[in-house]
Length: 448
Image (cartoon, rainbow, N blue to C red; front, side, top):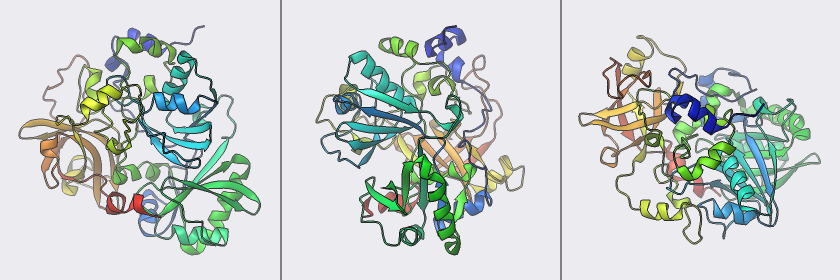
């Protein structure tokens, strides 16, 4: 039996929206790890006030790219600067379509002169793999899917443990017996723990101090136990799947934007190459914002705040479109919405504390002028005392302090007018900068 392609799914459903629109879809949380260890509130507090351990080992899709043309294919299909890309450095990889819409981002690490590791949800990996095959690049690929999708089960190739929070560096020094050598943001340094070699990537997820430790799975148990044991006097808290999904709302990263691949006739072959049962065919869309046109969900990397990562000193797929978009005043701005806590209790909690809330729904953001934006990810942030939402909004409404309303509900999809009054409740919210976390906004990338 032939495996159905993404294009097969679109054709059968009738349109990309009819394929992807799933009202009430459950929000994604990481696989394998416990949903909560000590409670999502305490786990969120840990990276704000103490020290937290986050396990990234199971939900990351890894693809190793190696060969004489490895740099060339990544450069040809990514907007990043490859002239300044040191071995041991990582970058947020930014691949775009010919129309300048993001495919999705990923974390790209340079492992050697002609070897890279691209990690994250697999849309960017698919993009690079396809174009490498189509273009005849001299490069080889090795993939390790996330644990929920690894054929035959088994363990990951790599462990990833993140230690972050105000006490992170003190705990790390205790584990290794000395401070880790000063490392620039998104650069790695080799480390050894009792003869076990791996690397420490200078990285965090909510603007806090910390490192991500990455190494062979055979060392996973030992390294994990070493951090747990050394962390006891520091009050180390393990972070479960619920709390893990929320730091991006504070740090300003919008996860998994809709890939801009569903409508371009030139990408028909790509859609036939992609499996239907992959991220591009199965990541659901839902919320109070509905449009029959999937292109209304496409996103520019400028809207995501990735403008500084775009390097026009090389030719790449989508370059002309990004040059035109560079000064496009119609592009939306990324902001943080702070929801009115009384409205949250009234609308979502039925008058009570709603507990943990997580949503990737595209909810309508309105003013008296009508629709001005859409939410991208919304979550409870207990230290703030309410919901925060990463939101794309028209530039005229992006000024901090602007008051808006969020339409909270699930549009049923095709067959109901996109602008129909469905009686959904409104929540008041206030525009604030993105990243919301001050440290992430002002200090994080300057940390040594």
